[in-house]
Image (cartoon, rainbow, N blue to C red):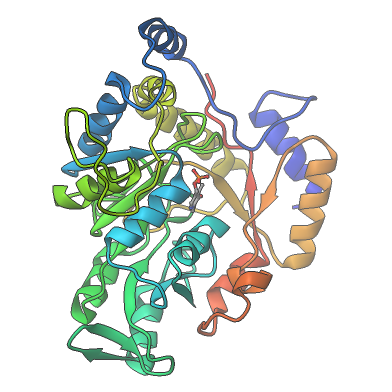
Length: 377
Ligand SMILES: *Cc1c(COP(=O)(O)O)cnc(C)c1O
């Protein structure tokens, strides 16, 4: 299909013959303003308040987990979840190179080293096969866990990321990581509302991290959360992200170095209104996806096993030349599209990290673009 035809198809589906069509806009169709006004009237705009508690209750319920800690953004959610999972300075975390930079940054903030493994071609998420193959070739089990035989570093965690809301094959990933005694933290920043084989994103691993940045399926302006099925992990995240203060009526007692990573109540108020609309957004985006799928043959289909939140819809183009041509033409014409991310080892700060062959990641890097995916009335 010519870039011109792609542009025309997108414009027809959006019923916008002219004007700018953004990639993903937030929608405030619910009680956002009422809850924000109530928060201001209450004076509880900052670090404590009923909306923070409500967000944590709603998210634990929606993800079928037991406990949730709301934090200031998705990156800090990942950073602290990894620390709580036992990631220490100088250790390694297995993840994918095809991801947003925050995944790798969260590992590095803990003083740990990412190891980049390949993704599945259909899920675009960490491949269980690549993971197992790499471990067999490079790792050995010792008393204190799995170790990288080349670097002699402990492999402290595995961090799969659910690209665009598609789910990694979590049953297989859990099986491999359990066999090697490696804790799993899910980067579910893009996957709120998605499931794999009937089990929610974020509930498979020891912990799951979400983002509520402005471009995600729902937003709190900025925000994030960690959920866990064993309440102690999210409780520990909550403790560390609220300055690690021991409960006391008036004394300041801090026995560890914590963080001020709380979600303000003002942002939580916005998020409660957004959480109430998650199902509406998913239904709307599903209809948009169906419209695209009937008109554009390069639309990437839902991988087997995923119950999809339909966050960002993508096209798989023939090759890099077609990708470049479509990106240039659409953005020139006011139809916003974006390429998938550059692989992490192309970035100067992660160029030295260990990795496998990256066959699928490099194939996708040259071909995948995202097209306008906002919810519509
Ligand atoms: C958005 C995102 C994050 C980071 O979330 P912020 O809230 O922007 O800090 C982390 N990982 C992935 C995969 C993301 O898409």
